[in-house]
Image 1 (cartoon, rainbow, N blue to C red):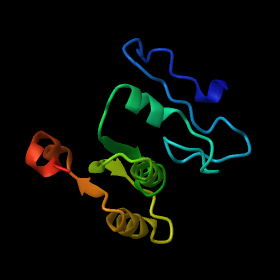
Image 2: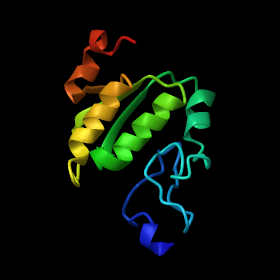
Image 3: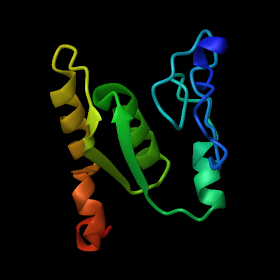
Amino acid sequence: MSGAAFHPSLDIAHAALVLRKGIHRDIDSYSAFYENDHKTPTGLAGYLRERDLKRAFIAGLAFDFCVRYSAEDAHSTGFPVFVVDNACRGIDVDGSMDLTRASLAARGIACISAEAIAAPSALRR
C-alpha cells in the first residue's frame, strides 16, 4: 500500500482521524461515508456522531464524484450537508458537473462558498 502512503514530510501528528477508503480491491470508493457497494461503512458517520457533530461541510476533488457521493451519503445518514463549492474542482465527464448540481439541489444539499461559512445566517438549517 505504499502508493497510498502519506508523504514522509507531511506532519499529521495533529490529525484526530485518518480515514482510509478505497482499500477493498473489488469495490470502488468515492464516498467518505460508504464504499460504492453502499453497504460497507468507512466509520466516518459514527466518528462524527460520537463527537456530537451536527453538520457536514464537504470540499475537495472531485466535485462530481467523491464530493457528490460523500455529500449524498452524509445527507442520507442524517447530517445537514453543505458543499463548499469554491473549495472543489470537478472532472466533468459527459455533463457530470451539471448532474451533480441537480442531484445535490434535489436533495436539498446547499452549495455554498467558503466565505459563507463565516456568515452563520447562511448556514441555518
